[in-house]
Amino acid sequence: MKEGKSVNHQQPHQNGHLSPSKFAKLFDPEASWDKDQLGDVLHWIRQGLGLVCGFLWGSIPLVGGIWFILFLALSTGLIYSYYAVILKVDEEEFGGHGALLQEGLFASVTLFLLSWILVYSLAHF
View 1 (cartoon, rainbow, N blue to C red):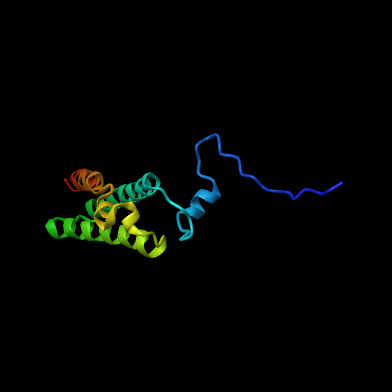
View 2: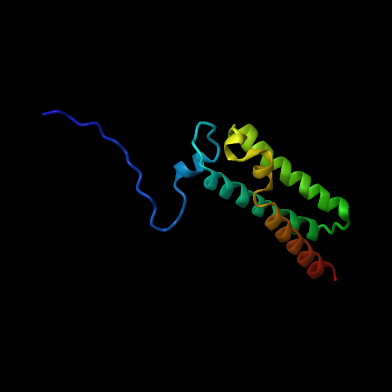
């Protein structure tokens, strides 16, 4: 009798949690991405950053347009460095830099402003 190789196949999680291989893919430059997957990842990174910065800006209390511009620069720089430096994807396959940098931008600006204004108003008035 031949002994078969034991292959560890990971079953998808029933509860919707990401498996360790999904987390590893987020930082793996060799992983393959389709346009929707990468767009979703970039979108949710921006949303998280918008929420964190909004809470931080509102609780410190920061006011003024310079902080809004700083958020835009921070968000854009983080997204660019994520797909260009960490993932090393060919941006032309995904519509160019403009399409990737725009992914989730307007929703994150809305979430950032909403959380900034709410936290500032509730904490400092």
